[in-house]
Each structure stands twice: as C-alpha cells, then as structure tokens.
Picture 1 (tube, rainbow, N blue to C red):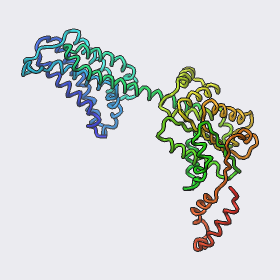
Picture 2: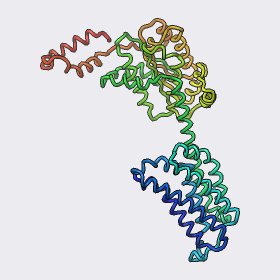
Picture 3: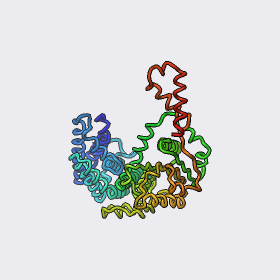
Picture 4: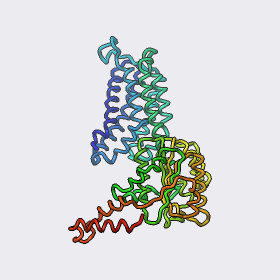
Amino acid sequence: MDPLSITAGIIAVLQLSSEVVKYITSAKGAKKQRKTLREELRACESILQQLKDEADDSEEGRAWSTTIEALEAPGAPLGRLRVALSNVKERLQPQDGMGKSYASLKWPFNEEEIKEIFEMMQREKSLLELALANNSRRLLQEIKKTSTENNRQLRTLLSQLQHDRAAIQSSEAGLYDVLDRISRRHDERDRHEERLAFLSWLSRLTSENHATRHNDVLSLRQPGTGRWLLECTKFKTWLENEKETLFCPGIPGAGKTILTSIVIEELLDRFRNDSSIGVAFIYCEFRRQDEQTPGNLFASLLRQLAQDHSNLPDSLKSLYERHRCHQTQPKYEEVITTLYSMARLYSRVFIVIDALDEHRVTSGHRDNFLSEIMKFQAECGVNLFVTSRHIPGIIGVFETSMTLEIQASERDVRLFLDDNISHLPSFVHRSPDLQEEVKTAIVNTVDGM
C-alpha cells in the first residue's frame, strides 16, 4: 500500500492543526489560554509527525498500516480531532466583515471552553501516544473502551464551541451528523464483532464441517449429470410447497450422495440473493458415526443457519453469554430450542440430509435424530430432502412422504462414459461403432447403479 494513502488522515489533521495554531498566534488577549492551547496542539502534532515518519520509513508502510487504520476507524482519534479542530478553526477565523487580517482577531473562547478543548486534546493525545508503540491490538481495545465516552465529550465540546444560537443552528446539524455517522459505524462494527464472536463460538460446539464435504463431493460430479432430478415434477413440487418432504431412497452405488450435492448447489444458487430463505445440510458418514451425534448434527444446522442470516435471535445471544462466562457446553435441549428460534427468523428453511442410513443406530442415536428432525419440521415448517438406502426403520418414518427412487439414469451414465472413453484401449477410440457397443453394454449392466 502507498505510504501516502496510509497517512492521508494524519496529514489532514496536521494541516488543520497548523492552521489553528496560526490563528491562535495571531489572536489578541488571553495570553495564558492561547499559550496552553498552542502547546497542546504542538504536542499532538509532534506525535502525529512521528507516526507519519514511522509509516513513511517502513517498507511501503505495511508495518504501520494496521495501527494507522485503527486511528482512522469510526469512533477513533483522527476523526474526532478533525471535527473538533474544524470547529475551533471556525470560531477563530474572521467572519465576513469582521476584519481583513489575523491582527484583527479577538480571542473568542472563555476559560471553561479552553478547559474542555484542552481535556479533549489530552484524551486523544493519550491514544496517539499508545499508537506510537505500534501495538494495534492494544490500541483497538483502548479505542473501543474509550470511544463512547470520548464521543460524548466531543458532543459537549462542540455544543460549547457554538458562538451564538444562529451559529449553532447553521453548523450543529452537519457536525452532529458526522458524529451520528461515526456512532452508527461504531455500532455496526460492534455488532459485526459480536456476530463473529457468536459464530466462532458456534463453530467450536461441533466438529462437523459439511461445507468441506459438500465441496469434495461436488467436485466428483460429471458436468451435466443429475438434471433429471432437478427437472422432475416431484422435486419441483417439493421446492414450491412449504413444509414438504422429499424422501429419496436408493441402492448402494446409485449416486445418492452426488445427487444430494447437486440439490444443495441448486438451492444455494437459487436463493443466493434471498436472505429470507435458509439452506442447511448434513452429510452422514459411516466412518464418522461416533462424531456425528444428534447434538453435533443439530449444532451444525444451527451454525449454518446463523452464519447466513444478518440477525441472530436473543436466545442465541443468551446461550452464548451463559456458557462463555462459565466455559461450559450447552445442553442438547438448549441447542434444539435455539435452532428453532434461528429457523423462525427465515421465511422458509430447506434442510438436506444425505445417507441417513449411515447415521449411528446404537444408543438410539438415529431414532432420536429422526424424531427430532420431524419435530423440527412440524414446529418450523421446514422442507426436508433425505436420501437413504432401503432401511425398513427409515422407510417407515417417511412412508407418508413424497418419495422418489434414486437410480443412475441412462443419460448420466452415458455422460460419464463419454468423458472417460479415452481411458479405454486405442482400438476402441478408432471405432465409433465399438464405442457405442461398449456404452450400450455398460448401460444395460449398471441397472440403476
């Protein structure tokens, strides 16, 4: 990054401070007050100049960029100094018709105003001194800690600096608008940091990372395959109607997991720009049965829905505060309750579950998960898409649901063969008739696998 762009905010304050010092030097009266204010301004200028020099001297300014950016952030010293010094300058400079030179200036501040200006400079100077240590983490903590009080003090100072009611009416709207914007941006930053803390905590509740699994599966998809599922009437019915279930059983090797990834990708693409619709998914895996407990899976659904919504329910915030303070894990029931609250923030929610048959059967895990997921659908009106092998206990749960058998379609098999025909011996490549014979034989043999 260009060092000049990094230090632009510092340069602006230095120039403004220099102009104010010039006005102070040329003013008449209140010698002691003028000296006090001038010395404090020059002390701040000295620190700012050191910060600028450090940024200029470091390699392309990178070593100091985080610290300088912290000083320029909403609710940080440079912004408040610009607002305050601009107002001080406005009070000091001659008004129209009130003199043509600095010599005509009369000192416009009373003792109380000087005290407020001096204290403001002291507060901001302490943060600038901290910045010289180039410890951006500590600086950010201190800025956040003092921001609310410093903004309040600046409002008080600005109010006192208005020289008459007419001046207040003409300038306070703009000045307060700046402070309000700073305050709003500061609040937005706080909400963003709070949100990141919640999501980070949620991530620690579960070891499940179904997004990684999804990307791995999707990478195995043969381009163009699976369209038959997305274009069939049952899928469209499931997509269009709320609280609908589409159960998709299939034999091993039928391509259930690949088709699940296609459905997930279709949902993510279709509703990418609609924040009112939530999509969450689970890939059950036999080799991870011990980790994929019902609690872990529901915590994963909660995390996915939370990370895609701009708002978070109060129940999640309460859960976070309660367990963060005591460094405890939430109970299963607490996760379920919070998941319900999170789902209700959406107008619609789609839940996709692949390979339910691979979920652990012992200790009642699968039965508990199935029971709870059906309650979740009943309570929150979610749409469920579920794949599984033909397991009687699972089929029984979905016997009244819309069902679509998963089978490898002839078109999908042919697309796969077309892309992999190059792996066959060269004599096959040279004979289109032989290629077609091979494809037909394989299509007739796979029998839905």
